[in-house]
Image (cartoon, rainbow, N blue to C red; front, side, top):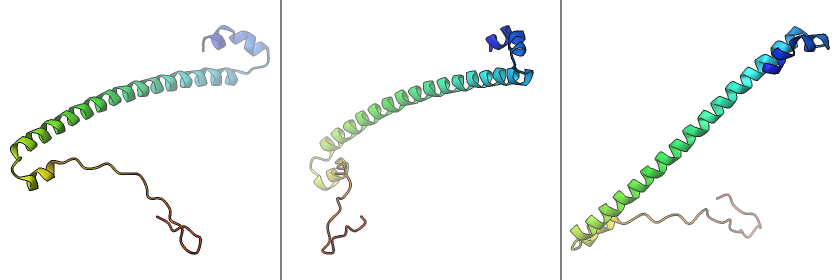
Length: 107
């Protein structure tokens, strides 16, 4: 911390002890180091997000091509063609149902 070094004598003359000034310098160094680590982590996360999104796009394209190929190739075999259909997405969680006693069972 530049100010603590610049005003070292003034700080000592106004009641701070050398241990307090050293603690300020140490805390400042730790703060700068932690901030740099956090910024680096944010950059890594952004990069990982881009890579994930690119992979998802490529996977979707590959799945579309595979299903199109299967649709053409197995047009006369509907039982095989069923294996290439997409899996339906879930509808969410089940809702609680009232029982005759007025309590809702755990789902």
